[in-house]
Length: 180
Length: 346
Image (cartoon, rainbow over the protein chains, first blue to last red):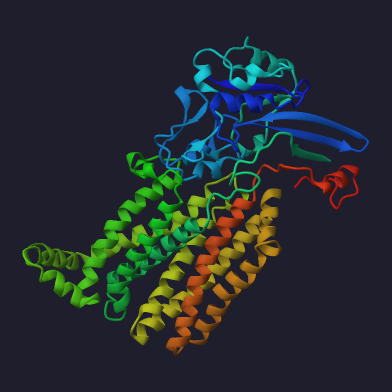
């Protein structure tokens, strides 16, 4: 099973939101919706405050509760990998996957009604390209690749840098990693 | 101290900041599913245990009422789908990890089983309709009359099947929600039994409303009192489960106990939906008075709907993500450490 991961360096991310715009352009995301977003996290107590930016999206979990909840098999792993995609031709819009996602990363596509989400730009990945958000990042803070290969950029970054994932306590095994 | 604010806009409608994906359609479906399940179980019980004389409404007309209720429920379920054109996709696969997939197949089995039981009871339930159907030219004597006779002869096995499917349907409506780990308020296995008992209680209440004979009304009124007692115990266990759960579950149950849902929960569900009918039914333990029994039954039905509404709505108000979409003036106070709860994140 191909194990894809995204590694985002919160030290170099400047919160410019180019990843959000690139995703909108690449995936023709309908106006008013978004597949990814940027969170500003401020920690500490005034005047000792520290801010970091975090570009968030679907975590393409290895144990994806949205895939388990789908009654028709529309939510599925792409090509035996951990990339979670939705087959619009099978989706009934029952919204079980939205309720099942602890990251609230899924949405109702307007006006069609099927469920949409970040696909890790699977149409680019299968051609060997990076997802649009990674490719466009001006700070080079975003990295994408296979965790199966120990020499890949993402494997090396995770091996050498302190990192975390969002809410691993959900048991979903998320695959978007943030470098501290 | 930590605060998370969105730098870009994340305003996916009905997902962020609050989940609003399931409304009255799902609450109605869960209520009517439980209601039909209760009627199936009691109708099956009346037939299997040989109480057809003692409980004529349960044995003959109840399956018809359940069939109608379930048809309305499945209609609201369909209305809730956002991509309705693909509704047939439910029946091209069985996804073993998805309770909703199991439920759609259970519904497919329930409808014919219930319809056959309704046909078995139809000659005694609505005699003019049966006479008219059997009098139809050609099909009447050749097809319809033999089908009536066959269903009637097989009513006991059919009743047993309906009891099993009724329990499956009733418990599934709760398991559907409890399978969502992502929504803290739903994540309790007690929802399955709670919705099953509530469904049985609303089914008994429907029989009290429909029964023509005082004896049958009295029997199901007493049965309902026992079910209300069990339901109260399960609600108590569910609340204890949440209060002893993680921080998200504690915050979720606080909405019900003393938050935005509390008046509906305490006055609507616990008071009018369980407490008052329990007192009325206990007062009629020896001798039933029809108007009071019917008032109690109506309150039980209202309480059954309220339970579904409260659980469906509250579950969606609680999430793992805690993002603020715009600047919150209270944020400054919290960062300065002089807010009400400087160290709390939730």
